[in-house]
Image (cartoon, rainbow, N blue to C red; front, side):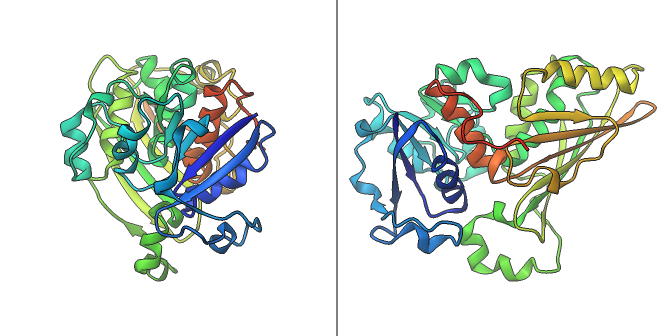
Length: 336
């Protein structure tokens, strides 16, 4: 039985983590830490939680007391805490972006702050479970992927690996529920603005763009070039990405589906179809990524959908935790 801590427990992903871990048979204790809400009850931050657990001041954490610690915090938190736990045996999963990019200069360009431990960037494992399972199993620190990148990479990786699509013209039209913006952004005005609205934002400068490109390049012999267009939907949770690619050679729709089914044949949470068009409702409150394949001549349109708070954040983090601690990978996670 393991002891776990969640730092940043009152945010949307922190709440989702707690909900999942409360149903985990191998977790005996979960401590909840906060920066500004210490002493309050966690149930005050979600109508879905009725536990009396009291939030602990983050400054009081002792890392050696835990088997694994989740950082469900703003960017910069996990890297600034590294000096306090680096000698500990504790395992770390960061749900923010501190360790997602391999290059220090790229990271600082997109995140606007200096990275305090750039020596870790090439050592930290990128936690896209279906692609990096073996490395995750042996990792001490895992960078949980962004939500948009999770849907995009899982959809595109098999085609790039098989060298079937043109690398220089990949278009990702991405839409997310407003929970992806985070609690502070919603409280500062987005929750009102998004009502009966649909908002495009951060074209060509979104922080997930270099993350997607970096990981797709690991499947390709050539440099991948993407056009990434994110939008916010007037719904709470879910991501749906419509992805447009060009085939390099003629191939049947059945053969394309076979590639996906073979690539993900042992995966519990990824499914592809060439007959059904998946919707956000198909994956809500699950750890699934569903991919539908639509082909016309040399053009393919992929529709990839996930729950941004589960497979795009807390669920994938628990999936990674299960691997790191030697549990059944599906423990506490839904795939139906």
